[in-house]
Length: 150
Image (cartoon, rainbow, N blue to C red; front, side):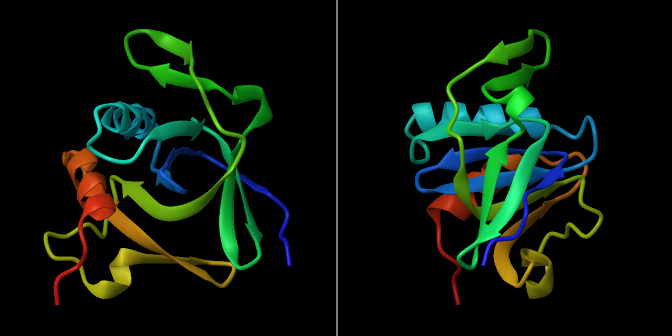
């Protein structure tokens, strides 16, 4: 079963074979995290990373998975604060594997298990709540490169 694509205010980057969906209020650093992930992929800190979409993306469920694609008018564009809107390589869609919520009010040093997942349309995905004033890149890199201890 496929659900229609919903447009949301978010950015997404495909890292390896899955997308990192970055949500948050305006000015929270979604574009910055997206670009940081692309740079981390180029530096070999994480698998190769490429933009899916910046600022506005479309979500759809297909085959029990969440998929993200760029808003057509913004495909291949990313905002780099201080430089403006720039063109870059992008992919037309990717399966979402991780959700990052910037300026999350439920962010904690040791978050409870329920805060570390997001459920939408019957699909549960890992989630990272990032508090205001915290740098999200180290958390995302850790989530992508480590496993949870018992």
